[in-house]
Image 1 (cartoon, rainbow, N blue to C red):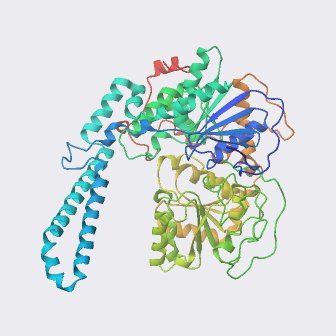
Image 2: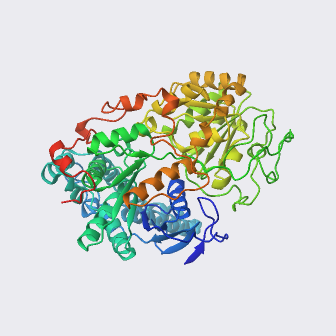
Image 3: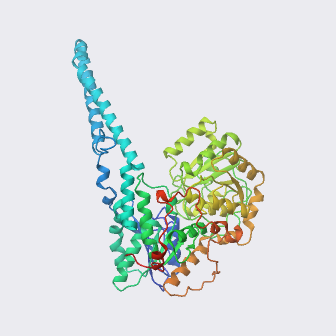
Length: 635
């Protein structure tokens, strides 16, 4: 399967592509454990590296089990099938004999439940057939009384044993004493190598990617996030053994000890932490998304150098100047969007387009605008409101810890305000719950849930709102990063209402671009929204600060990556007309008081970080660690 992606970071299959630049500087193989299309950071990294003259092959995981490939700018994308038999170890098929001896085996419960339903349905049909003859009604009642009672009893018995299985499975995920003892034992005996026993599914990626990486013979491997770190490190070992030096760059998207486990299993987090600890010292360079996370990674893994910071910032806009200056329609609109820029809402045109649809989506709204050149949908038209109606927008993934419940609850105290949630799956169960709650509050008509727009349209699409909301709860990874929507809102020149998660709250207070409220405090959120709506130009003025938005662009971040690649491969970075030397770091240290409270907090636990007892406060033995610094290979 071969197709081409569109211009920009996401790439729409079927669109025209510019020719890859000539004069290759070396081959870079990038690794990611997802399907690429939903990950703007990965897409932008591949495109910008190819534009800088590197030969780039991006390997991702096929979502449908079939191989696929396309062009992403000058980079080649290849999706590989990843069979996952190791992700289903035999223990998951065993019934919990010790804690729930009457539970079914996992594969047996659905069969038994369906079987007893079929039995009861058969009895209903037989009774109906006998009842068709009025003379047989008394006979049917007597003849089928026993079987019907037996079927009811069987159904209750099956339901009981199924509940026992469900409770035993849940307890196993949380961690029975035996499970916790097994985790502790393997960690003590195998140390960093314990993940091979605790979570062997990580090796499924090695078996899918390893040979392909070897055949590509890269000069440099760029491993995105924790799952691909081991794949890249082992490929480096094999290359070195074959006499072919390879450099490894680790791109840490998240702080693993603060990640909510992707599967409900007590083994998941300790196994992935051990995997990361084993292979982190193999990286010749590391990059990450914030200065706070960089400091935590250096401390946790004893890295010789602090990881460079590459922000999840949008690409610079390809056009300048204002767009439409006339007013938007004042009545509800039901037709498709027709504007080519943000409808006028009293604030300037955005300085850049977004890298993706909110937190990674590349889908269109109602099939409109799926190619880069299509018209930008009108947010207000889709909400059915005019320019004078206050509108608060949230874009990104929908989950309880994202604080969307706070936004919905606030509608009762903000009777004049509409709220738009731009999310990947508007029909998701959690969003249905939010709709129901808004209806209970009498605010159903003021809550608008919309799907993602194409990545190139995100910033002009969001620019029609009056406020950009980031109501995150206190989770470790929420505390330590400036997330993508923060920059998208900034380039849309939206005043912000941000919860008091550390890094975003500190930056917002320093720049003056919005108000900070206490996370999960609806009354304080209402206060912040009212403050912003009362004086929006006061907050938008922050974006006029010289150099602020310029350093919050992907182009500035790409120069940092290019310097890292060139240094590792002993090349001089090519000079470009637009080249401006950027300081290493997160690009906004000067906005947070120079000393940067986040770096001063190195080694101090972040709220929600956990303790050593759950595998979250891990530290390496410093003597052994120092021997492995500087791009060592695993034992």
